[in-house]
Length: 487
Image 1 (tube, helix red, strand yellow):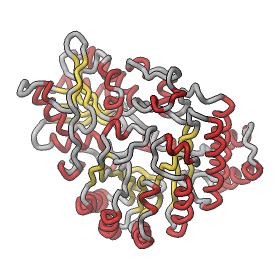
Image 2 (cartoon, rainbow, N blue to C red; image 1 turned 30 degrees about the vertical axis):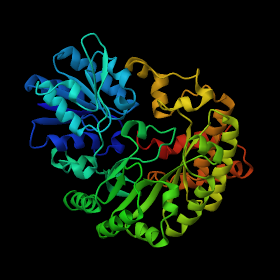
Image 3 (cartoon, rainbow, N blue to C red; image 1 turned 90 degrees about the horizontal axis):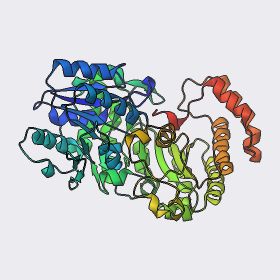
């Protein structure tokens, strides 16, 4: 038996389909005996795994790992598995081992790391464990020998979703994953493409999955969404694509296909690409049920956007904010503030830019992050060199500072003065009080009105210091932040 394990990564209310595990299950279905254990559903996944290993002959434990809480849970579980069953090989795949491969292999409880797309790599790894091929022949695989020396095989070319079978939803209790959200009572998730053709310097997607985007055919996307709606009652969707709208012709066909399904949905898109779309396409997108689109605006300064290799102008963000308003689609703009080359200037310009967006389109949702480097990218910023070094072991990644870094709660930013950091955080607090997110359905009307009233003067005059009354009020109403909804 092969066990596919997804460690806990989120709070129960934010639980969604474990898409990475389902992708692996799709290639095992009908050819291998396997079992899925999801720590986001199972209250004690480690004990479940240990029980399976006592009852079954387990050939491999395959673990999907994202940075942050999922990595911490993966470490704890794999330590116990290795102690109890030292003969069972353990492989990590997903974003974390793809980016931080050396740190993963430095752990004595991880034998293999899969980099990038893992479906075919998993199948070939199983063949290698059965001595039907060599480990060196498995593309996308990293491993170590008895002396601890690391080996990294060549990259595996990425394939699009259409190259693989549908996810075996019947292997999961689907009802437990259709959770309420702003978009509906029974929200499912789907990923209709993989990869991204853009190479923004602050993003690890290209490092993990290459600079190509492989898209699912509109017909297949429609069929899967129809299946989820008809057989499980899904009424809303969150698309996890890094860039949902790559081509206008593809978008129009997909919109025409899914409009009859009556779903409300959320996705991510690029500002410059969507500006090229016609008004007719925007109308088709809204008619198909699009409620909100996440855009990586990243900065309000052209010099920062150039440093980020974003291939975007600040004016384009303003144009998009103006234009999308007429189609009744909520734009969600994300900003990375505190560029290491000039963090004070970047912060000043970015906060003013956000105020301009709010003037043009008050419905805009704003997400603010401190600038956080990713591996192989931080060298682009001269000021970061000598101030920042990523952990070499999983134990160091487990420490509180690096866990906070992974979730961007309190990132390690030595180039950012405490006063500048406080200004960013205080601005975010005032902004989120003046315009509480629409994505918090639990927020009572009185709480929303109170936050808006007591923050209005601060926002109007631009005074963000010492916002203690807003901190207290947000705590009293338990205001949820959009950037925390995935945790």
